[in-house]
Length: 233
Image (tube, rainbow, N blue to C red; front, side, top):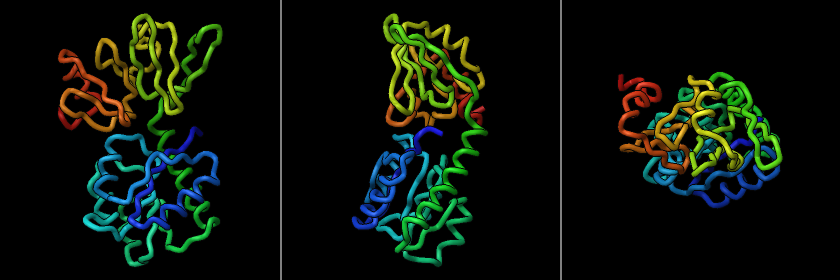
């Protein structure tokens, strides 16, 4: 499995420091963001690719429970709190675990494994199977379909953006469009091809994948809406 991108949300500095310490001891966990403000966390969830959310409950202005209720695309979530009475609500929101502070590294590791299992299942259901092979200078590079976020046409090259970085190759965007499975990748602009499952929202004429904004051409917008946001049909 590829790295698991984590967002940490807690209004207490010591709680965030402990989470970062524990995460640093687990190789496949990567901190994608750290928030003391739940309002800022909602913004980050719209901008960044987040696989796993560590979420406190009692916070000013917006509780962790209401934060999770407010977002349509929910990451795998582990609640971290000093209050046991909210466990029922947390599991109603499909949280994979509920860590009561203070918790040990062993208890944390157990929760992470549950999250890892849930994420593997989610990726198996939503991620396309297969590998794209491209030439990078004198090398042949294999890129699993599930790692691809979007592909950008750039002069006579293309940039293949993945969760681990980007790969630049002398390729045709049209050939990649023909090669990749149409159910999972869609051309949204003459210069852009996106992974359907990685799109988080449409903002005006731009699709958001993590912090990237990908333009949708006017003549493709109805097709893109029908595929990515079927509620608009």
